[in-house]
Length: 268
Image (cartoon, rainbow, N blue to C red; front, side, top):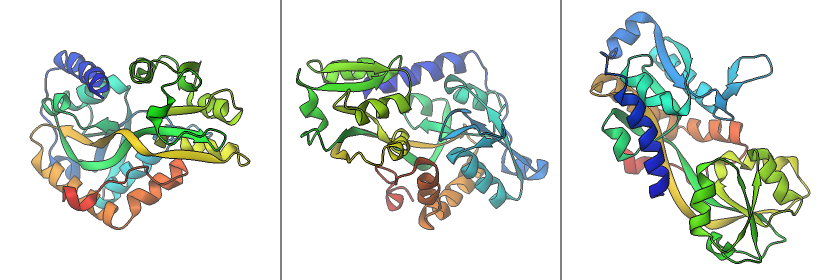
C-alpha cells in the first residue's frame, strides 16, 4: 500500500509543481456559465472510455452527467491522463476530477476532496479448482498468480508473494482468461476492475477471498479552497449514495456490486 501511495503521490506532486495554481471557478461561476468541466480518464474502461460510436461512456460519465443535471448545467468532459488529474485542477483546466482519484495525504496538500464516491479493493480472484481461502496462501512455489505487466502490482506482489510463480499478461481481460483456462491459479488485484470479464466464462465457477489486502477510497477532486463547490458535491453524493444510485451505476458498468461499499454514514 505504501508503494502504491508513494507512486501516486509522486506523479501528482511532480506535475503539479510545474503548474502554478490558477484561480478556480467557484460554484456561482459554474452555474452562471452553464457548464461544469469534468476531468476523466478516457483510457480506463469501465470508468470511462470511447464507445463504439466514439462517444464517451462509463461510470464516471454517468456520475458526471448526474452532477451536471443536479446543477442544471451541462457536463463538459475533459480527457486527462492519470498523472494530469491534479495539475488540471490546480491550473483551472477542470472544475472537478473523477478518474478513480484516490484520497491520500500527498494529494491533499494540492487539492481538496469530497467524501468518497467509490472504493478500490485489492483481493484475490480464483476458481473452484484452487483450494485457497486467502490471498496470503498463494505464497508457495506450487501456485502461480497472474498479473498485468508494467503495472504497479508486479513489484507489489513480488514483495508480498515472493515464493509464488508469476504469469505476466498484457491486459485485464487476458488475466481473467488465464484463470479461466487454468494457466494460473489466482490473481490478486483491484478486483472491481476485473469482475466484468468473468461473465465471458459462464461455465467457470469463480471464487473471491473474503479478506482484502487493502481498500482505497476514491473521491471527487476540486481545487483547494472551493468550499461552496465541495459542499454541493457532498450533498449530491449523499443523495446518490443514499438512494442507491452509485451502487446501481457501479453494477451497470462493472457487472458486480462494489467489493467494499462506501460506508455512507461514516462520512456524512
